[in-house]
Each structure stands twice: as C-alpha cells, then as structure tokens.
Image (cartoon, rainbow, N blue to C red):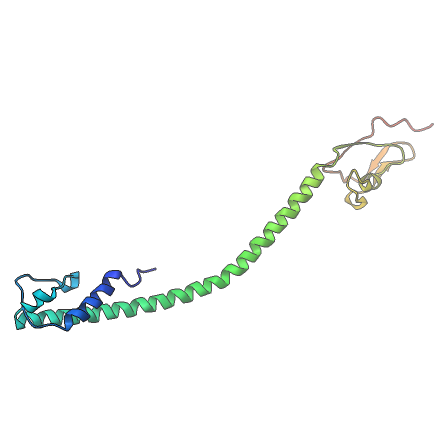
Length: 179
C-alpha cells in the first residue's frame, strides 16, 4: 500500500495557510517550497514585493500539488478498503475449511490411538472366526471390520484373503481336530 498522507505534506499545507496570509517582503536567502523550505514571518516581511509574489506563487503551486496528492491518497485508501473488505469475505470460508480439517485430524488421531492400543496378537481357540474375534471388546468391538475366516470341520484355518492390518492370529497352538 502506498504511503498514505505524509506528515510532512500535512505540515506543508499548514505552513502554506499560515504563510499565505502574510506574503509581502524579501530576505536574502532563497527557499525551495517543494523541498519543504519556508520563510519565517520575519524573513517574509523583509522580502521585496517581487520575491513575495514569486514565493506566494510557489506556495500556491505547492498547495495545489499537495491537495492533488491528498485526493490521490484518499482514493487509494478507498480502493484498499474495498480490497480488504473483499478479502475478509474470502477468509471466512478458508477458516471454516481449516477448522473442519483440524476436527478431522483430531478424529483420525483419536481413532489411530484407539487402534494402536488394541492387542497385536490373538490366540485362536476352537470355534473362533474372525467376526467373533473382531467383535470382542478387547479387539475391535465390531464384527464387520473383518471378513469371514475360522476353522473348518477338519480344524484347518480358512479365510477369504482379507487379512487384519493390526492383528496377527496364531493358530499353531490349536489342538489337532478329533479324528
């Protein structure tokens, strides 16, 4: 954003108003009004009428330039305010999305922590199947998390190729099926 109204410009306008009231005499030093140099009242009183006229013309030109600069800066302020108001409208949806994503991250983190706390191994016993194992409170407490698997009538472990990502099932210690 451009510099808004400069303090020096405001002082210059004030000085122009004060000095413009007393334009009439000459001093020996020359001032550059555009550079912000001005005569004191005593110096202004000592100027010749020609120098006073030139000085007053320079003050008027500087006053006009400063007024134009103020108008430009005011337009810039209005444009900037409109831009800021437009951006405020865009922040709200972005903030809502961030909040939604943060809530989702918290939910997923909680689920990960729950699954990490579950046992990593389970000793299969007779008549077990994955849905029964998955439904146990100390496993997943949800029978639908696993496919169908278990021991067939011969005591062999049968499954549908859906393996558990967190649970290793040990069937080696099962007793041999009755013959």
